[in-house]
Image 1 (cartoon, helix red, strand yellow):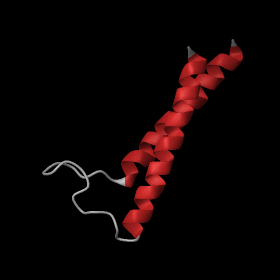
Image 2 (cartoon, rainbow, N blue to C red):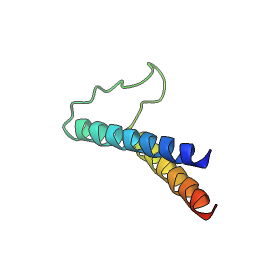
Image 3 (tube, rainbow, N blue to C red):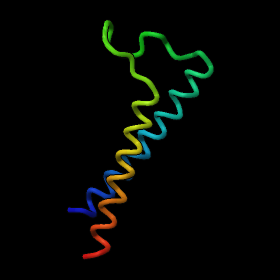
Length: 70
């Protein structure tokens, strides 16, 4: 089970990192539409994906450490 969490967390971390980099580039180039998200709601920022990537990579590391001891 931990190995599956490790693999899934790694790929989700990579996807979140790629989305964070793409959204940051668009924001830096002022090409990101201002109402990016639900109308009237909170806008989605690249920091959301950045924090998600950190969470998934930490999940991967924790799962790997648990499986390497077993």
